[in-house]
Length: 631
Ligand SMILES: Nc1ncnc2c1ncn2[C@@H]1O[C@H](COP(=O)(O)OP(=O)(O)OP(=O)(O)O)[C@@H](O)[C@H]1O
Image 1 (cartoon, rainbow, N blue to C red):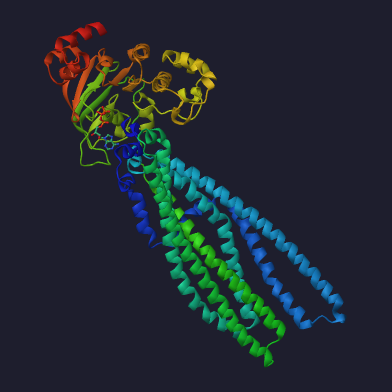
Image 2 (cartoon, rainbow, N blue to C red):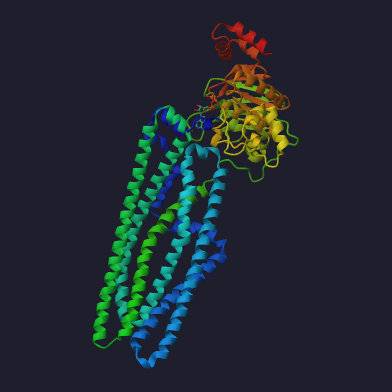
């Protein structure tokens, strides 16, 4: 239908609109940018429920982490004893036992590290798979108004790039952070235990280090978010251009497209470089501060050893603990940046997950009557697309269709014909008035139940990169091959399908690029035939067919229309001659209604359209002749 007819990129390229306009302002994104200014790692808390599902893995990871950290912390104790005892010959037995213990510690450390890696990485993969599923499920639930205001490439980038970033955060980064946190705290505790005096000196230096680091981290986070957003914009643009490659080439717009993508990629690089620069400075600053303090403190320690207040072994032990503490603080500052990036990604995903579908079933939906009859009623419907609230596409539209009736809707382009079908499918709700199917207001029914009773042949047929058979049976799992073939036969598609390399099993390219427009349309008709729904909506269903196929398909459609309520939208009036009634739409309201003959006779808008189409402007009488010929 209308929304998918021409993609934004095609339109933008065709019109050579400036870049900013194509990047339709994305409220979601702007909102996120505002929020990310004041948030820290809090968005990562949104991952807690996902982690909570895998308590076993989390417990395993924590146990392995703690074991590895404790083992590491035990090493300096050994070193101190070694230095203070010396390496005298009398102590050979002691040294052997000591080295055996050290060896056992090393094995324990190796095993704990392997388990940590296994648990943590599995957890990351597991959580990100769940997250991807949840985000995709939410996106599929959102109503078309969401897709009117967001770019598909941007959504895909959230689904892929942002989830990947979270994977590394939940997996490697979080484990490095946690390991270093435990190590840091443990090392500080051991430093205090080893030498309270030297430790107090070290601890007093910590605020001096930590405060600037936090401030720096904030700036890194802001820049990373910017880099990620710029990249998402570039990917969205690339997605649009790739899907519209033919249009781009037909308009010789490749250089312009290359230039724009190049500029977007450069902008992303610029943003990334700024983030990298900030992170490098952060790392340099952190290391300088930390190791500077360690060296300072050691100088004090050396004075104590010289004056005999401290043993050399104890200073060695303290030295190792302070190196552990400093090293782990340094690593923490590094992973802090990565966690901040992941936090930005989590924020963007949470936004998508929090997006509420504007069309949902009411808490207790009214069931549609069984058996379905196919009665349709529009009562004083006013409607504006949510993306264009100031413009009424439908203006007090009222009409009723009896079960089994065939109604044609005609009118100038933009009159609101396709909008009628969108409201019937409950893609949108009217601003006022009501749309009823079998006497039930669509707003009170379950949209899935409503859509199950409607078969659509849209103007812009969507074909998926799957086999012909799968495309015909789209959305109808469990139908048999015989039913698919019968539907294709009825849609006059069997012959061309059998001529394809693998018949019904032939894979068609993405969006059906390997098929002609008429072939795609016949597949859509086969889909509608297979669905066998009580209400049939045809939006320019035969527009892409040549005269001969159109005749054949029309015959198939006649058979299909015979038993059910049908709404036909057509520019070409030849396809609507057989309708029971014709509604003539202009500016979102019905301006004329009747049969072809009565409308031609009344000399209004329809007569004008008919005159233009049938007689090439030669007079009204010709239109009547055409009618007779067509019937
Ligand atoms: N998704 C959308 N968001 C905003 N406005 C829209 C959207 N789809 C259609 N419109 C606008 O609503 C009006 C009615 O559009 P509609 O597609 O119903 O017209 P139509 O009669 O089917 O036209 P055509 O014969 O060209 O297909 C037009 O002014 C159009 O610009």
